Structures are given as C-alpha cells and as structure tokens.
Length: 143
Picture 1: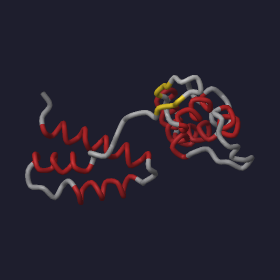
Picture 2: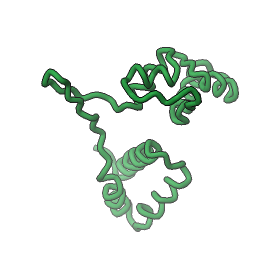
Picture 3: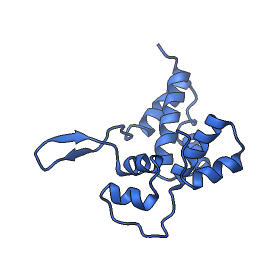
Picture 4: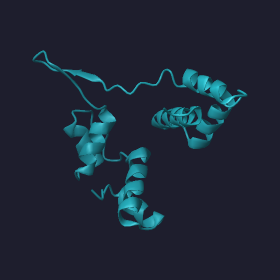
C-alpha cells in the first residue's frame, strides 16, 4: 500500500499533466497547487485537498460513433494528428488525413508536440538541446 506522501505525489503529477494539456505554464500550475493544496497542516489534509483539486480530471477517450452503428473509443484529434506527424507527414497533411479543416500553409507545429520530440531526441541520442530542438521543429522523430 502506498503512503500518503506517494499518493500526494501521484495526484500532483496528474494535476500538472492535466493543466499542461490545457495550455498553462508550469510556474502558474505550481503556484495554484501550492495555494490550493499545501495550506493544510498534515499530509492527510494535503492529500484530501489534492483529491478535491483533481476530482474533475478524467482519463477517458472520446467515443467515436461510426455510420454503420458501431462505436469505438479513440484518441483525441491532437493525438491522431501527432501520430501522423511522427510517421513523416507535415502538420497540414496530418490535419487533412484526420479529416479536419486545412489549417493553411502558415500553420505552426504545436509547442507541446515539439517539446515531446525534443525530450525523445535527448533521451534517444543524448544530443544537445539546440540540436534536439532543430530536429523537433522539422518534425523529425527518433522512432
């Protein structure tokens, strides 16, 4: 069984991941966490506050209804676009392949996708931050 400190850390990581998906920067997320959760005196109180803060976070995938009456659980549109980009398609081609509206020729790659590629490159090849960022901005994946 996990201790209260470990459960608190799990809740913290879940909250940070959810807030990053929503587009908040990490200093703002940590400030909100400290103001909401860390005001309790005991670890149990902090854990209780953390659960209140993260109760609305869901890990479910959207359900896609097909024309033939079947339904599947599928990743969100961002995940689908990123999957195509990892296969070598450009951002614009990925949007079209997913059946979304064409973003136009001047569309920029999402910052979250670039950061995930930078992290993957640094782990895979142990190269400098600048080199990893250059490869990531071109959409090149190490996998």
